[in-house]
Length: 135
Image (cartoon, rainbow, N blue to C red):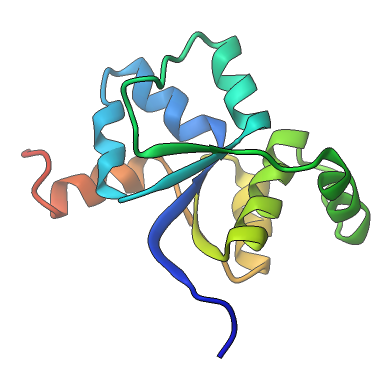
């Protein structure tokens, strides 16, 4: 058997965190015991003034720019931004299967890499089915 799979942990792209912040519902992310965010994603979130300091379950993870560039060269990732590619690189490095993203191209590439993309609506739905929120 290969490296340990991290079940129920996720790698976050900018979109779902930004959108949940816009509706005052970042707390819904606690349906995942641990969420990792690359420095590139955190930089984008900071540019939108998203404050993650009180959300300790979101863990920053550095990913080398050289790793992002190498991954972009190996795969057809021309439609993805650097932060999006960092999500795929981090998922590969940490062996995490769940990707939080609303980006169509990143969702497609996630599926190509046997990852599970979950968008903002999916997070809200899972929060409802797990009893975190009510109708």
